[in-house]
Length: 263
Image 1 (tube, rainbow, N blue to C red):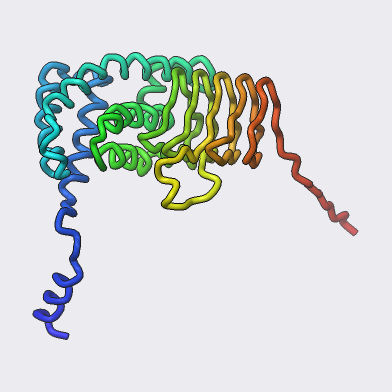
Image 2: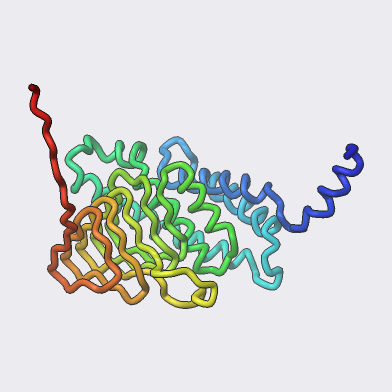
């Protein structure tokens, strides 16, 4: 097959006319600028907000969003939410500081905790998700996923003072609901009981009430599954049914230790 034939066949199968990977790169730049605007002391807020609006306008064009929707109004509403998002993120950081004995300072939380970074990008993406802005919020949280190992769908609803410790392998589905003061450890999955495209508009992921702790590698599945408040879910637990408030749930593995005596 010569070069001309290769080109012809590539063009034949290159079927996505709107698949512009500049959108992915620009979304990552927009995400970085947002994060630094909220937290970096050397980033000028006023100047960056103007640059963020320009970034947003560019994203709208690249994403081929509905041109009948006034994106300037969307940006104004989003901008008004940024102080509230920052307040929530400060509560998240304080929850980590207060709960994790390994934390030496609040600065360490902001700069070195992957769980905090994943929560921050989720909260920034969630507000755009609520506006119905397609794809960009998902790419924002996927950008954080790639860096932290934490996969939070921007559609999830998460309350105040959320704490993800160690972070790697956490998965939180689109319709999950997490109330206040919840602590989650590495490897936790809040997922769907099964996957079917017909369930797209259905609540598929669990609800976690306030003051719940979920330890490493626990799996909680199903849209009707509710974990009652003040409950502790032990590591490696597998749940597909609701748990009443003030419960302790644990998995008991059978562990055998065999020793060989020296003869």
